[in-house]
Length: 119
Ligand SMILES: Nc1ccn([C@H]2C[C@H](O)[C@@H](COP(=O)(O)OP(=O)(O)OP(=O)(O)O)O2)c(=O)n1
Image 1: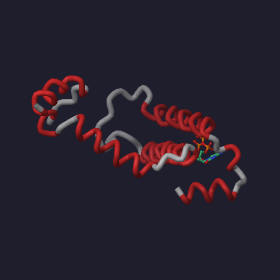
Image 2 (image 1 turned 30 degrees about the vertical axis):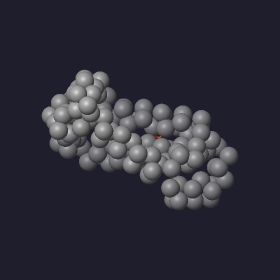
Image 3 (image 1 turned 180 degrees about the vertical axis):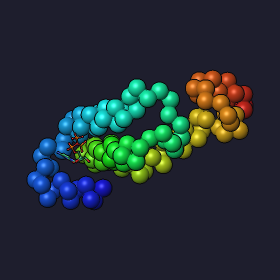
Image 4 (image 1 turned 90 degrees about the vertical axis):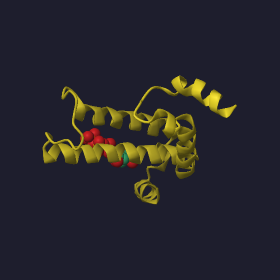
């Protein structure tokens, strides 16, 4: 986060890094990230069929998405590390490992099980 703030301040770009602008920049970068996968069909883990250039481009685009995500959280005064921990705790409750192991059904499918086990 500090690297980003320095990068922005050194260039006098603070006035442009507003929530809406950062959100639009984030969406644009997600588009560029998607473009790398476009028309390739399913891609195996580890990207065995991708060139080194494609893998490097992927790292760049993922970084742009992360940079704008961190910037957007910062501009909105969201404590992102705290929000990640909170959300992961919520996820763990919503998807109890012992109930969902090996299945990727949406959480509604487990509501009944949760009710039965909380009684
Ligand atoms: N006003 C800006 C412009 C850029 N960046 C930073 C965040 C991103 O990490 C990267 C984005 O730079 P570009 O807009 O040049 O986009 P790309 O790097 O994706 O280049 P291209 O659009 O040519 O693929 O630079 C920023 O913080 N604020």
